[in-house]
Image (cartoon, rainbow, N blue to C red; front, side):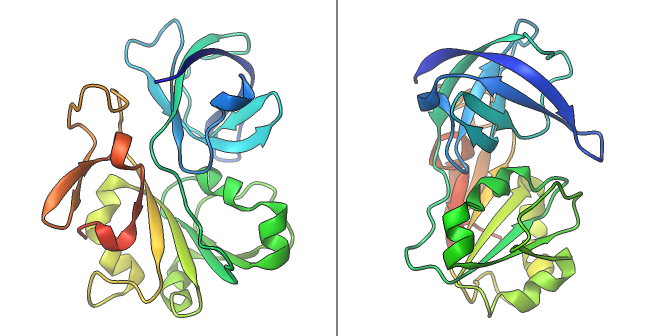
Length: 225
């Protein structure tokens, strides 16, 4: 596990009051979409997982939530990047993004300028929205089931508790999608794959896997739901 130091440079609040943080760190520590860092400030006994919502050359914007004890200037111990991130297929023409929770922040890095130029992208969510590219089509979450036959690929952001309701949300009669897809599973990952503590275990077909090292992004058809 790669260890490095970081520093909180700015705290910002979104329209719902959720806290995100700009983190200054080496470029190699910035997690790619779906991967994460374990971060601990002076007040944390158990490190927290940070996902990138936006990348700059000197660091990244950590998606909410971030600890309330963090303020500008807080020094952080960072470990990672860790886990498996999103892997979008080549030649993608139609991409559906869906945030099933309170924030779309962890999906925003998938909206690169090159992707928006070459791919039709539709976002499905009921979460508060930040400023987004004008080329992005935005829809309420209940429109998602009708988009599954349109999309070439589906990228989801969801809490692990939502997995048991996924078939209902997608209005599917079986736990198979009409298009390939991946899901970023949000759940506590305190050990970052070192201890195999099992806190983040997620059901897959005929077995279990650990979100911290086998994920946190999984192929949807691999999961049990």
